[in-house]
Image (cartoon, rainbow, N blue to C red; front, top):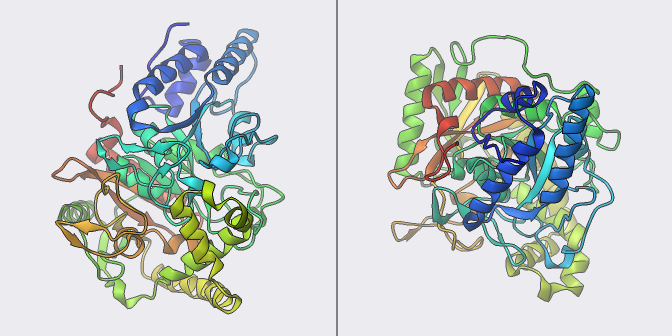
Length: 480
């Protein structure tokens, strides 16, 4: 079959071209597989399922010849992070101890995408069990930034972000436990959405009521976030949070509502904790504020130091969950694990019951603090991260160094902006907004009230109309 390069085209363009018989699904898949080969130096792919993708495409082409109806993602090539269960396709969690794991079931969100006739062609890279915000693992190696290979892609959904930046399909499924979908989206210059708690079923974790991790979507075009979310948001009986909004999936295109910018009350939080903010990042934040103001937004600024964001609370809960899930690996297979994952588990092993109980109560306090902000605001605006992507050699536990000076550990100094909203459940998005003087992407981070994902996507569309970020490809990877 001839390859057709559909890189840069929207989900809707893929679906229309396929369903109108302008292109075969197999041709689209061959085009993506060609790009996968070209993308190898950046290492975004953990497991490639070329033959499975071809077989799925051939089946779609046969159905089209028979005149059958199709789902909303018909012919769309998609990838999923290597933490998400995929039936019949290796899900190794980037771990040598799980390298032979082939699930017998799909995660429900994957099953929904498949039912919508998407074509799953690959699993994308992640650190071992998604434990850090940098993407490297002993099993799969280092995933590199598509704009500069010396720098990190961010993590833990680094492979997903690189895949979207390089045109390997229009949407990718990510996970986000403390910003690990939004952080790499900012590092790689793409759009990354974390929906409201319960919007997307995540029925796999053993503690359903204490979840901090979300399945999310990354995309090149903002509207594709809506398309991807709508196709994975039907509730699941084993995820109690999905019961809060019933069984009705997210609707996209969303009903017309108020203008995405004019009249919106936007509270800017420039520094969450008063720490360092990269000058290029701050300059782009100021440019965004000026643009919002010109388009009729009502801007106010809040000193982030006036809020107790409970940043350690998320760490304590995550570490306690990790040691519960992986304690046997720490005890019995320590030498096979990434040393940074071992250290992460040891942190969890040190969490006592009283500390965990206090953290669970503090999670409620954090939620109430953020809810109070939305009394006076429709949206919150922060940087996504405090600096553009660090070097690919950055250690998870080493200080972040800027201009030869350590500015603090990654959690406090780099990605404090994303952490609170995994605890509080609010939807959040990273929007690409230009690049640093060194050419690395810079992201803006918007947070909305519960269930207001459509507002975030419309806002991203407004930004994209200004910046044309969706048309911006790394050198050598432009469409065609």
